[in-house]
Each structure stands twice: as C-alpha cells, then as structure tokens.
Image (cartoon, rainbow, N blue to C red):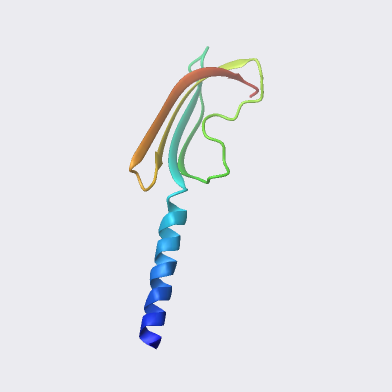
Length: 89
C-alpha cells in the first residue's frame, strides 16, 4: 500500500510540473530604431506568463521596428510577430 501511495505522489507531482511548464514560453526579441537602423535591444530567454509579449511601448515619438518569436507548450506552438510602432526610449 505504501508503494502505491508513493508512486501516485510522484506521478501527481510530475503531471503538475508538466502542466505548469507548458505556460512558460521561450522568446527571442529584436527591437531596432526605424529611422537609423540602430539596434536598441535584443533578448533571448524565458518569458513568464505574466509578462507582456512584444515590445513594451509607452506612447513615445521614436519609431521602432520589432520582431518577436515565441515558442509555447515545449516548442509545439510557434508564434511570430513583426511590426512597427512608436515608443519612448
């Protein structure tokens, strides 16, 4: 009986970690100033579920080009966004 209980706890913990891990995403982001072509920022790493995707803009006057790629659900889903917006830099 103890062996079954221990095994079920390990299975429950493994399933919980798999489900939680699916909510995190891997992100590569590149932001370039549109007028000069100067690289503003480039980032690659884990993005947490509460973080916004894409560039963080604050209604500025500088035009930026952005290219964002994200992989979700352990790489099974790939999202890509490219565009231009204004930002306060």
